[in-house]
Length: 169
Image 1 (cartoon, rainbow, N blue to C red):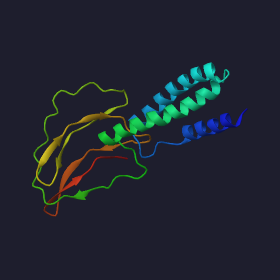
Image 2: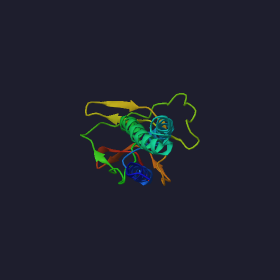
Image 3: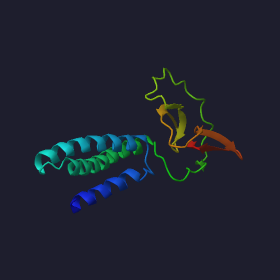
Image 4: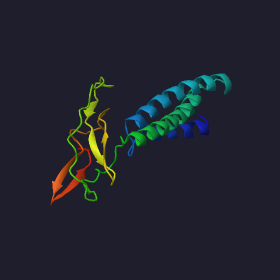
């Protein structure tokens, strides 16, 4: 076994056994799909160009695909706000004296769940310092080991409205 194959195997195992902390469902899906497609493409290329070394090509392609797919998925997770963290989010933050939020809006027709594991995350009012804007509900796959979802909401404390962000526990 040559040194590059041993190195690539070690990198593949490290990637496989390293969790995706600070990521979300799209990161993990992107890494799996990218790794699978990269391994297939690497095996074909390795078989045809490296003297029949399909295994070495599959390992290198799988690692490259997993990293690329995970990076693309992570960008989507950050845009959508579906990030799993190693520490729970802050329990609340005080906003600069917003007035009482309006009543929740009707969500309208809710689309079918994209996955049998997805749960509906209800919409809520967000305060930007000038006014409220409605953030629509969405489907989300719970992070591993999460048992409960606490929805974002507003509470009145000591005469002021306080926003409590959503979190998984």
